[in-house]
Amino acid sequence: MRPEPRLDWNATLYSQRHSFVWKHGEDLIDLLAPQPGERILDAGCGAGQLTAKLAASGARLTGLDNSPAMLEAARAACPSADFILSDLTQFDTAEPFDAVFSNAALHWVRPPEQAACRIAAALKPGGRFVAELGGTGNVATLLDAANALLGERGHAPRQPWYFPSVGEYSTLLEQAGLEVTYAILFDRLTPLEGGEEGLADWFEVFGRTLLHDEPEWRASVLPQLKERVRPKLFDPSNRQWVADYRRLRIAARKPL
Ligand code: BEZ
Image 1 (tube, rainbow, N blue to C red):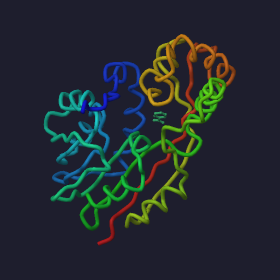
Image 2 (image 1 turned 60 degrees about the vertical axis):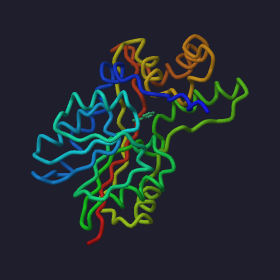
Image 3 (image 1 turned 180 degrees about the horizontal axis):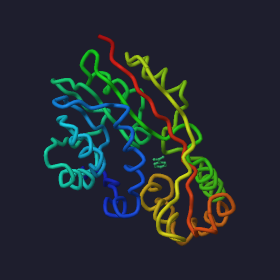
Image 4 (image 1 turned 60 degrees about the horizontal axis):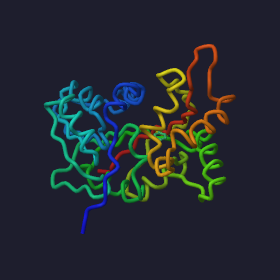
C-alpha cells in the first residue's frame, strides 16, 4: 500500500513572510518564566524560533512537530535542542517535563482532548503548561467568506481548525487533569506582509486544509474571496491585508 501523501508546510514562505506568528508569541515566554536547567517541551515548535528563545534562558529544550520541513528549519535555529518528529496526539515520554510550551500550534491538532491528555501526561507533578492558540471567532471573516464560496461550489462548510473559547478549553484541560491558572481571549488584528499578495501568501501557508483541494484555487476561489473580504480586511492607507486574529492564552499546572 502506498503511504498517504503528506501535506507538509511551506517552511520557506512561512519564515519569510509570516514571522509575526513567532514574534507575537515571544512574550508568552514571560508567562512561562523558564528557569535554567528545566526541561521544556515546545509542542508544535514549527521553525524553532521560540525554541531558541526558550533555550536562551538556560532551559533544556525538546521541540516536537509533525512536519519534517519545519523540523529541519528548527534544528538549524536551535542546535542545542532535541527534536522529535511526531503528532502531539501520539506523543509519549518516559521522562516527564517541567513545562510544556506551545505557540500557534494547538489549533491544528485533532482531537484536542487527546492533545490535552498527552500534554498532561508529559508533565511532572507541579509542571506548567503555557499556550497560545486561535480562540473562538479567530479569522471568522476569512473562514466565513471561504465557506460561502465553497458552498456555492457544492461543498459542505469546513472548519479545519480548533478555535475554542476560554470556558471550553479550560474545561478540556481540567478534564485532562490540569488546573487552569490563567486564561484570556483577545483580538489581535494582524497586518500581513506582501502588500496586495499578502492574503494569497497567507492562504498558501495556512489555508491548505481549507482551499487547496479546489482546482486552481489561486485563480478561481481566491480573487472572489479577496473582493468579498476587502471592505473589512484591506487597509488602503497602508496597502495591506489585516487578518482578524483572535487569540486564546492559557496557563495551567499539573497538581502535585
Ligand atoms: C492562527 O494562527 O490563528 C491560524 C493559523 C492557521 C489558520 C488560521 C489561523
